[in-house]
Amino acid sequence: MADPSTALHAFNKSKKFGRKGPLCVALVITQHARKMGLPLDPGDLLTDKGGQVLGLGKAAVQSVLKRHGIDRVLAAEGGRTSRGSIDNMREYVALLNDLHGQGLSDLEAIERFWIERVYEFFAGKPFKVKLDGSRSLRVLVRDVLNQAEERQKNTPGMQFMGAVLQHLVGAKLDCALGVGQFDHNSFSTSDAQSGRAGDFFIGDVALHVTTSPGEGVVQRCKENLDDGFRPIIVTTARGLTAAEVLSENAGIGERVDVFEVEQFVALNLYELGRFAAEGRRVAVNDLVGRYNEIVEDVETDPSLMIEIRK
Image (cartoon, rainbow, N blue to C red):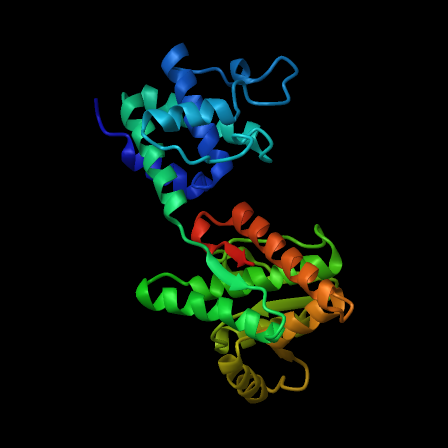
């Protein structure tokens, strides 16, 4: 039977199935395909009340992993509580049925493909931060960005630093304003391609988050001003001067606010923690927790996660 890997790779990339919830769905539905045969009817893969994917749970997922010598737990609930699991099931069933129609439904090869993705998921090492009351909150933010920059140097073509910067700012805003005030997007979804006013659009403010401010960002700021929005640029310490100079050269220097990210995030953590030691610890934990939720929702690379070391 022909190799389905090309179609699987394309599906995994476009549908972001490399996260733990979708991976659980793929593993369990592949087992249903083995037992029921193809094509599958997605209506047959729902529980009686139609609220969950049939058979989706920790035991079923771990049973598949164990056959491949994997003992680590992929998801505590086996993806059962993952948002969008039913939609993921329907999309994956459509793929399997399409592969079946093309004569590419080699379920052994398909299962091996997902097991490889599980190995990749477990191999992704998160960035690490240590809660140390003797160090400033700016240093905590700097440490994460430095780790991302170092990883980026060792992995040409990958923009870890930009992704971490964007999602840290997004998490900070969620913690300050409450979740649901604006949309989060993957780092690869640029403002220009999507037609968005900025990386984050809140009220009449368009926030542009960038490690290397260039003329393109300043041009979008000019467009924001023309459209009646107030632009803000959040960048690194190195990018701060460049953003200010480029804004001045474009004649909008006094109409654009430029913030250095360490201060932008750290000051808010002090405020959220009410300037108390215990409050700061809680604020940092909340920030990292929300950051990880965003990464899981919009990115496919689990190594972008942050782990707090006690």
